[in-house]
Length: 33
Image 1: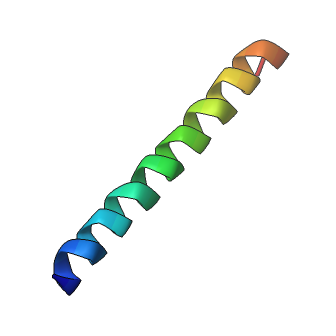
Image 2: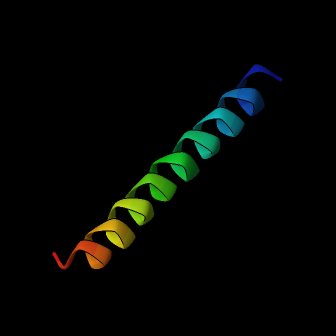
């Protein structure tokens, strides 16, 4: 039970990190970087 919760938290954190990177990439494209 505890390990599955940890796995879910890790997946959520990973997804959040990817989303942030995608936003930065889109922002860089918009600003011409």
